[in-house]
Length: 361
Image 1 (cartoon, rainbow, N blue to C red):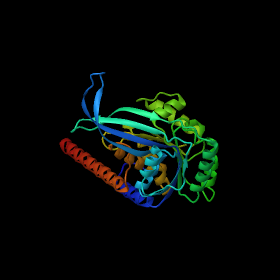
Image 2 (image 1 turned 30 degrees about the vertical axis):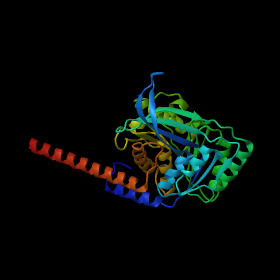
Image 3 (image 1 turned 90 degrees about the vertical axis):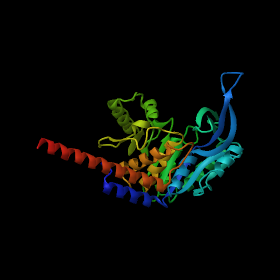
Image 4 (image 1 turned 90 degrees about the horizontal axis):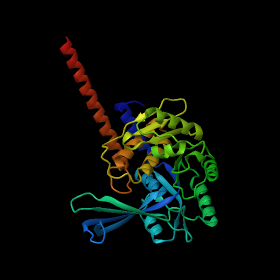
């Protein structure tokens, strides 16, 4: 797919409509994202630190929970298979799931402490809140054999009769290559379905899935190639990851530099960032990208069309505070806005070209 001309925009809008009702299984690590908001009062006399006056606290699903929320917000039917603790963080995280998320496959283990990431955000009365510090608790939980057995059994049930599978591996030890092989066999028992992987630390341990979509720093750590602004280094790293993992495609997200899509036997597709590079918050943006990719591929999109749609979703969600989602209507508005921008740009180019020919004449 090339530029977002009228026919491309129409195809993307039709794809967004086709995503409604697709059945997606989201499997893997969940996190409770806690946001504590306060107002800057003064500098402490005890130490050179800010004193914050407490405003409010919000707990939202992170990791696989955020991915499931994004699938539901885009109109998909989603079952979440995960393990949470029978603790306050787990209860609040589950309560914050989108109403469209099927919770029946969530294992609630009394021996498990729900991973909790607390972000302290501060600002003035009339200014945006900025993150001051983050406190992580239980991000490497102990998974008991009993909890693992129930999780694996419920996950195998969750992927039956689905249109796509998204696996979130945030390094908690719940997801393993051996388990993914069984999960893929179960999901594809009645025919192949898109099987996508989001793995933070073990990119090279998984093979032969549909797509992985790491960020640039994760790719650098996996293949040992520093990328930065070096296009040749990006090409080497992307091709090395594609070859070593035997994925159907690898989509590298690059922050303000956009995305790069690698497929076997095809030229690399570079997708510029959508929207402003004045980013508000990148928390959970990768989950939004993965959710959109999964839904798009489950609806029959090509890798490139799915990546371009995911790029829109990522560009929208980073302009929102906290662990956020993107709706189908927001995604449609982004497609229309980009089509209008490209049409206007093409019109200005034609006008300049015509004026140049007149001057030469």
